[in-house]
Image (tube, rainbow, N blue to C red; front, top):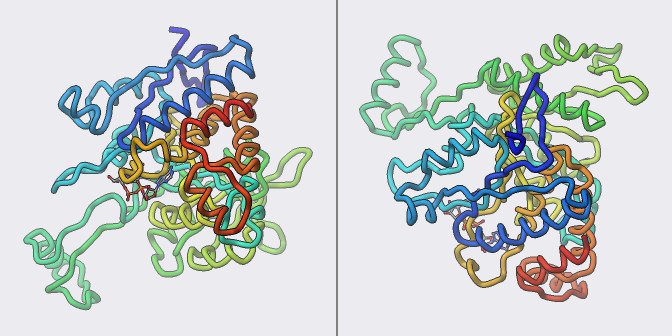
Amino acid sequence: MDSLITLKNGKLFVPSHPIVPFIEGDGVGKEITAVMKQVVDTAVAKAYAGNRTIEWKEILAGQKAMDEVGSFLPDETLDAISHYKVAIKGPLTTPVGKGMRSLNVTLRQKLDLYVCLRPVEYLCGVPSPVKHPEKVDMVVFRENTEDIYAGIEWEAGSSEVGKVLAFLADEMGVDKIRFPKSSALGIKPVSREGSERLIRSAISYALENDRRNVTLVHKGNIMKFTEGGFLTWGYALAEREFGAVKNAQGRYFIKRQGQEDLEIKDCICDAFLQNILLKPEVYDVIATLNLNGDYISDALAAEIGGIGIAPGANINYESGFAIFEATHGTAPDIAGKNLVNPLSLVLSAEMMLRYLHWNEAADLVRDSVSRSISSGKVTQDFYHLLQDEKIPSVLLGTREFGETLIENL
Ligand code: NAD
């Protein structure tokens, strides 16, 4: 039993030798998973000299699962993640075909992983399209289970959409739909409970990690009850559960002992997308709805040059379930060619180590990644960008870059 991660009173208890399930992933998954495991094992060995280790347990999903056991997402995989709580995964091919849901979305929904967590911090030496990428240092909490993303929509011309249109016109008096005969319709559920648990996670994270402020990003000026609700419920929660108080200038702060108070503020999403280019340094922790969060995460990742190496996680802080994952896809064009950059999964593993409170090992991984990129010895994606900017660099394959990461640990 002492290899099981457990959650008691909202606190994660991690044994010294936890079993961590991993999904290798399709396409480039095999290559990046191999590097990630070696880097993590070496960092943990260096940090804890054998007193802590990770026992990896492979679980199946995607094409490999289909080939071996005849299902893209076997029940045993979900059972194993529920049992062991924390897992890490490579990218999965979304099977093409009507009615086939994305495996990633299925995993998030089945385990109710309501936070999509994306830290966005510049790594020195990474080629970036903006002048001062080092000013970007944010952590995005994107709501993962609600919004227009919940998948409640009907095709234009279908009998279902006809029923909903008739209901809206006859029962609700809706006459604002410009072209009713040819409209498709989608539903945008945003609940108080769903918003509160996401915002609670973001504020708790900001307090635990000494962050400066939390910004609620929304479009409440237009969508008053859904996105506006998110905003109203967010401030109410900050007041009720964290004791946030409005000052004379109308700004909200949560008191902290011995350090600056934590500010809770908000920003309309379109303005936010401008501001992250014009003054990214004013933002820190971001709490936002599902669709906004999708756009924001990728825009921020691009600013720091990290769109292909951005790490991510899907977490339920109430159950403790967490899946850390490479955010890019299976990259079929380069799979099996020793070309893929393994950093998205390696940095996701760094996030996982921090989630387990193994910060010493996480710091080693982070330092090694910084040192490796700064040395200019990189995989082909970075190599081409550095060449474009006339920065001297050396081209390495995935395995060789993995060896560099280990040497630099
Ligand atoms: P992709 O991210 O796989 O590839 C887009 C481009 O980026 C390709 O040219 C690829 O070679 C390159 N690229 C991606 N990651 C890279 C890396 N680490 N190093 C170097 N180059 C990299 O996106 P896609 O082609 O749209 O999707 C391919 C498949 O992946 C689809 O089946 C899609 O459904 C799936 N997908 C899975 C996830 C996931 O599991 N989280 C996410 C996105 C897409």
